Length: 229
Figure (tube, rainbow, N blue to C red):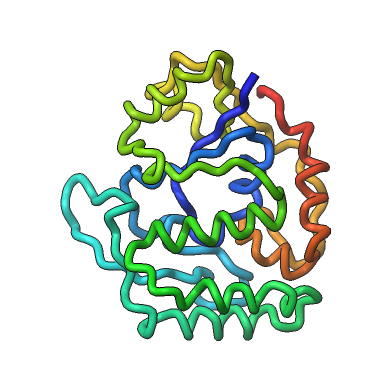
C-alpha cells in the first residue's frame, strides 16, 4: 500500500503540513492549484508577539476570475522584501537555541533570483523536509507535468494500491474530486506536547529554531495519527 498526500505549496508551513509529508510515502507539491490571497501560500504565522502576526511574500497577481495558478504567480524583486523578512526572523528568534544552526541556510535560500513564487516555496519545503525526513520522496507537480486535477488523478491510477492521506478539513474537497481512491483522514487528537513557545499551527521553522535536529522526534511521536476518524 502506497500512502500518497498532496498539498499546494505553503510558505514556511506549520507542523501539520510536515506531518502530512512525514506520514506519506510520496508527497505531491500541487503548485497547479489556484493562488489564494491572504492564505498560507504566501504568508506564514509567526509568534503572537509579532505585529502583524504574519510574514508575507509580496507578489504580482491579477484579480482575474479564476485566479492564476500558483506556478504562474510572480514575486516582487528581492530588494523589496527579502532583507525585511530576514531582519524580522532574526529579531524574533535569534535567542532561540538553534537559530544560528539554520538561519545561515535561510540567508542562502532567500536571496536567490527566483521569479515565480512556487520556485521559492518549493525550495523552502524541500529544505525543511530533507532536514527532518532525509530521502522522503517529494514530487513537484510542475516538474512532473501535472497541470491540473485530472492529470493528478491519472497519475494516481498508476499505483496498484494507494491511500490518500488528508487532514480532516479537506474531506469535502477530496470526496468531490478523488472519491475513486481510498481516503484516510489524519487525526489531530494525539499530537505530542510541544515546548513552550511553539504552537503547531504556526511555522515549523520556529520549532526547528527551538529544538534543532530533535524536531524530527515530534513526528515520530505522531505516527499513531495515521488513522481514520
